[in-house]
Each structure stands twice: as C-alpha cells, then as structure tokens.
Image (cartoon, rainbow, N blue to C red):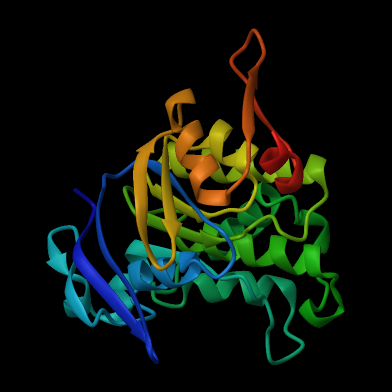
Length: 260
C-alpha cells in the first residue's frame, strides 16, 4: 500500500473536514470529485503533507507522512497546485529544473527537463521567461516540473489539482492522456482533483466523492456510480457509451431535473 489515510481529519478555522479513510496502491488512478467548496483541494493538500491532520494518521510506504524528511518526500511525491505563479521572471527550463532540487546534480538533468517539457506539450517554450507566458502555457510548464520531479522514480505519488483548468478541449484530452501515460509507465499512483466528469470517467479507475467536507463514496468508475454522482451534484445524469467503451455523461440543468 503506497498511501494510507486512516480516520484523518483536518481543521481549517472553525471548519472540520473528514474523517477520511483511503488506501491507494502504486499504479492506481483516483479522481477526487465534488461541488465547489466541498474540501477536494484540502484533501489533496492533506495527502501532500501541505496541511497537517488534526487527528488520525497518514502513511506513505508504511511510514507516517510527518516522519519523512522534506528531501525524501520530494523524491517520492510531486504536487501540481491550482495556482502557477512564480515570484520572479525565471527561464522556463529553470522552473522545470526546480522539480529536481532534492536530487543530487546529474548530467542527465538537461535532457530530463527537455523531455518533461515535450511530454507536457511545452517543448516550444524552451528559452522563454515564465512570466511572459499565458495561463495555459504556465500550467504546462508546471506540469513539466512535476514530470521532471518523478521522471526517474518508480512507484511514486503524483498529486494534481485541476491540472487542465486553463486548457482548450483538445489540449485537455491530450494532456490528460499524457499524465495518465506518465504515471502508468512508472507505476506512480495518480490522484487528481477534477470538475470534468467525463475526464474522470474515462481516465481514472476510482472516483473519490467529497461532499460537505466529508467522504461521500470511494468507488469504481462504472455505471453503478451514477446515482452517487447525481446525489453529489444534485442533478440528473445519463451515461452514454460508444462501441469502444468511451463514456460521456450528459446532464440536465437543475431546474429541468427538478421539474421532472
């Protein structure tokens, strides 16, 4: 078991989130779904050790998450946050190389940085300054950073928060496949906070549903989850699948669903 949350809770001011109990194996892909403000990003930050639990336990590779040194943790898990700002006008290749600061200097770093940019469809941004890029370009550079961080690691943990929010539909599909392929090739567990239900249904094995600061369900991405998704978002859904098994969720506006 790569990551184990056992009755973990999180307190943010007067608000309490959880308890969360989850097991995640190396190589698994899990999407975190839920309405805005439900606690999805906070759960991801809990997994990343960016926020400490107020109770319960979190273990990575059987070791309490709080016991990991910062350097060891950086070599084992990578995090892509929602915000992509960088304080200074750094070159793109330096931003990507920041993902490897916890590793000893090696002669392969320049090649890995370039390969990571290519996998994130950002190879054409080499030589640019990060602060001159569009929001979508910055997101791709930051995606390349986490690729570089876990490039030569196996069985690690990749945590991404709305990684495709600034992308057009075609690019979103290509990059989602690139993220999934990257994790699969190296045996990394992939956890993604998403709002796009179709991306979640087609690229992830498990759906972790968060509502009102707690875990509503953790289940397989199969048609049986439709009632739970309808409960999660308060809307009517219909699952359509083509001959190759590609799933599309069609929805009705809430007013129409309530009228029916």
